[in-house]
Image (cartoon, rainbow, N blue to C red; front, side):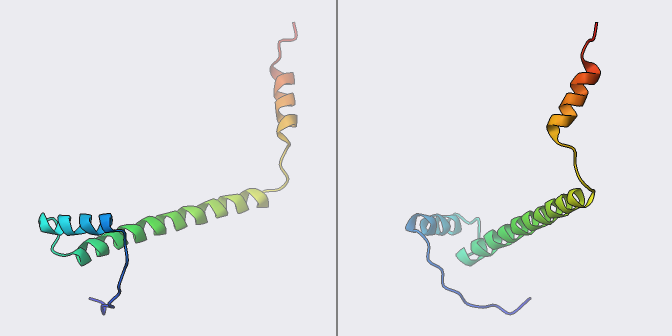
Length: 87
């Protein structure tokens, strides 16, 4: 296990009370355990967001690198011309 570093955190009293009640209810052995689990969840969520952001940046770059696009108005005009009933 990595070395532990002692930190002091400040939180609203209602959150602190929720932590204490959860420990008293036996769900966790200590408030530290709850905070560590919350931080692990936050880290996983943050890592997933960063991966999604990188994938989005890659997709944008691929789009930009693919060359000039066609203006939407031109595309829709061509579609209307192609599929409009000319009878």
